Figure 1 (cartoon, rainbow, N blue to C red):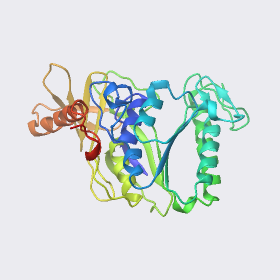
Figure 2 (cartoon, rainbow, N blue to C red):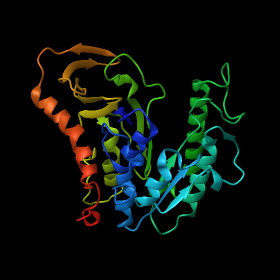
Figure 3 (cartoon, helix red, strand yellow):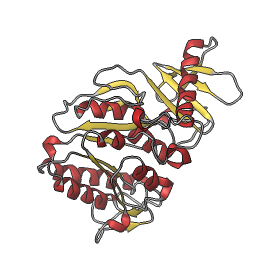
Figure 4 (spheres, rainbow, N blue to C red):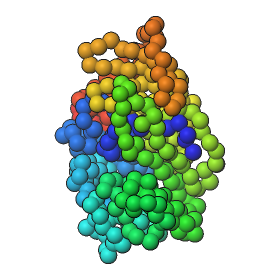
Length: 325
C-alpha cells in the first residue's frame, strides 16, 4: 500500500499515460491525444508482446473518448472492450456501463486465460458526475447522487470483484495494481496544490508481501515496479523507479502551466517565463517559501520537464528496434 503516491496530472489521460506507458507529464497535452504517439510509442503492452503476452483494454464507456482506442490499439494492445461489447449490462449511466459491469467483464476474461500470459488494463467510470450507479448495492447516506455515495459504490464494486478473484483459478498467478488516475477535485490557490495530487495506489496478489510503504512516489514508478513483481527483466525507456529495488523520494506533477517537483519535503515549482520558486511542504497543505533556491534541485526539476518533451519529439520513447532511423 503506497501511502504517499502522487498523480502526475489532473485528467484521466495523464493517469493513463503514466500507468500504461510510465511516461512523465509534459507541458503539452497527454500523449494519448498527440499525433506523434499513435504508433511506435512505448507501453507495457508493447514490451510484454515480446515476452509472449497478449494485452487488452477494458472500459465501460466509448473508447474513442480521449483517443484511448487509437493509442492503445496502435501501441501493443491486441484487444479492446468498450460499452458496445458488454452483453446485458446491469446499469448504464452517462459515462457508460457501471463499474460492476466492467469488473464482471474483467473477471470473465481472466477466467478464460489459459497458458498465454496476459496484461489487462481495466478503467472504471462510475465515480464521475452526475454520480450514477445501480440501486441496491450500497447503504445510501442522504442524497443518492453524491460523490460520497458514488465512492461507496466504486469501493463495493472493487470489493465484489476481489471476492470472486480470490476464489478463482487465476488468483495465484496474477499481480493486481489498483490506482487512481487523479483526484476527484483538483483546484486551489496554490501554485501546485499537492494534497489534490495525493492518490491511493495498491499492489496485491500472486504472493506480493503486504506492507505499508511510506516513501514519496510517482505514478510513473508503478509500471517498472509492476514489471519487477511479474518477474520481467527488460530494457525500456521508462525513467520511473522499480520500488522493489530502488528508494524513492520524489514525485512530479503538471498543474495547468505550472510544474511541481516534490523531493523530500521541498517542492520546486516551475512556471513559464519566471524563475523557479521552492517551498518546504508539510502535509496536508502548508507551504513555507524558501528564500535560498537550491539550484541543483531546480535543474533536476527542469530536466524532468524537458526530457519527456524531447523524447516525444525525437520519437525516442519506444523500444530500440522500433525507433525510426
